[in-house]
Amino acid sequence: MLEILFLLLPLAFYSGWRTAHKKNRSSQTGATEVSTRFVQGINFLLNEEPDKALDVFLEAPSLDAQAAETFLALGKMFRNRGEVNRALRLHQHLVARPDLTNTQRQLAMLALGEDFFSAGLLDRAEGVFNELIKSYPKNTTACIPLRRIYEQLHEWEKAFTLTECSVTDKTERTHLMTHYLCEQVEELLAKNQLFQADEKLKKALSIYPQSARVQTLLAELALARGERAVALKYFRQALVYDQHLLSSLVKRLLSVFTQPTELQQLYEVVSTEYRRNPDAKMLPALAAIEQEIGQGGSLVPVLHQHLQHELGNLQTLTCAARYLSKESDTKTTLNELSLALGRLANTLPRFQCANCGYKLHEYVWRCPACHHWDSVQSQ
Image (cartoon, rainbow, N blue to C red; front, side):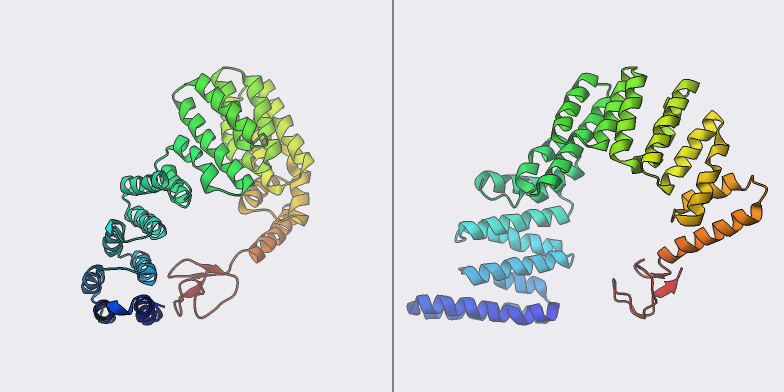
């Protein structure tokens, strides 16, 4: 790929020279000089001397559209190869040139910000992207990388303000704005700033009323205020919106709701959701709650049914083995577990690349991800 790019560079430079030559035949001597510089630079690139090539390119007295575009492509190539210092040098030179058009300068500033971001210099990248947005308000291309920076820095309020200009899809924008507000709520709850957390949650609820995360945080806010019944109501609504939360919430729920009446209410909430939409992945959490209230045996028929017909996960099968091992008919239980494990095994990749970790269902001699030969092994 790089070899092809090196072959295309002379064509790009030659095209630029021809364009300038046609526009002004009187500048033929200057154009020839520029063309000679480019040929020298290409020779240095082909000889694996990129620094000397950069010296030649950056000394060019003038740039046309094709040359500027080629410089940007060359800088991107350096960055993609991990040679960020060379990319920075090239893009900084481009930004400083007075003969760039507005479009070229914006592209150069955007590339320079990406260079700083790749180098881990987030403050420098932030400065470049903010300057680009300030100087060219209609150019919103810097909003996306700038939002990524604020995500890494956990500056959620700034990330929130950039969602309008960086995300065009309405659903994605709604989800992002809600998550940014929820991140702020978690920080406020940790500081016991309940009023501010409440205001943020109201805003998040107005943006995305069906957010399970918002309902969970409303429950946490209610617990912080000592409103345990209200908290349970919000936890229940969170499970209605997203059943998959149960596995991550069960420990928290059991640590909070310890009274017998609360545990019974919790069991009714979870069992109702299970009946509404039976999912084998809910069984471990349901079993843990049943064990707390002393009703572990009621799950046995349900576990048998799932082992015979449903595809669960390892956690579900472990839960089933633990509960059904207490039965007298262990042979039936073992047969059901064996069949369930077989169904699960058929869905899992059987092979993995030892070089990059890519997983496959069928054996191949060459890894499709990293392209290494003889690196695929059975798991």
